[in-house]
Length: 335
Image (cartoon, rainbow, N blue to C red; front, side, top):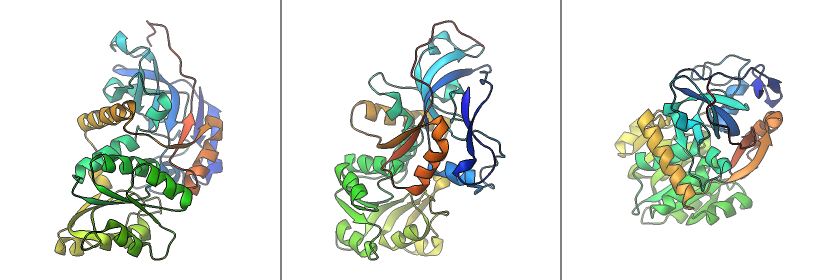
C-alpha cells in the first residue's frame, strides 16, 4: 500500500510517500480501505520534533490518527456484517491507503453523509461536541471562541449557536471572519487588531462585557489575553496549542474569581463517550445541522504540502488527505 511516512523529525519535506506492507487485522479487528485521512495541527508539531514527552514516536512512522473508509477485510471472529460497511475510526497510521482498527473503535457512517465530511469529524466532531458538554453551554451564555475559523472552531461556532448562546468568534482576516459569521456567530473579532480584547468585550455585551465561556483553541499569548475576558464564575477551556504552547493561566486568579479551568486532559474521553459523541456528531452532520468546513483535499503524495497548509493557517477549516477511492468489497473476505 502507499503511505506517507515521516522519515525524520523536521520540516514538511521529511514526509515521504512510500510503499509499505498492507496491515493485517488481528482478532477483533478489521482492515479499512482509507478513503480519507483526517489531519490535525498537533500532527505537524509532532513531525517537527515537538512534544516527545507526550507523544513518544520515533521516525520512521506513518502519522495520523483518524480515517473514514470502507471495511475491506475481517480479522478472526469478527462478524461478517462488518464487511463493506462505511465507517470512521481512530487508528494508528492514518496517512495510508489501508489501516486496521478494533471493531470497538468503529462508528458506522450514515448513508446520507459522504466519507469526506465524515473524515473531517473524526477528531474535531468528537472534541467540539465534548467541549460543549464539558462547559455546559446554554442559551443564557455568552461564548467566546478563539480560532473560530479552524476545523474545530467552525464546529464549535455551529454547536454553540444551536444551543442558543450568544457566540463571538475570533479569527484572522475578512475571509475567515465572513465564514464565522456565515456559520452562525452573532459577532466576529479580528485577532490581528491590537485592541481585539476591547472589541471582544463590546461584542460580548452585557453589563460586564465578559464571556461566560471561553473556548481557546489557539493558546499562547492570544489565549492569555482572552482570560481576563472571562466572567467571574465562568468557564475557560485551554484545549489548543497551535502557537506552540497552551495559554499560560494563573490558577490562583481563576480560583479567586471562581472560574473553572479545563485543559487538554479534560477532552480525553472514555471509549463509551467516544462512541456516543462520534455518533452524535455524524448524526447532526447527516441531518444537515452541522457542516465540516474543508479547505482543501491533498493526495498522500502531497502530505508534505498538506502539513505546510495546516501550519500556514491560510485555508479555511480542515485539511484532509485522500487515500483510496470509495469502493464496495465482496462478502466473505477474511484474513
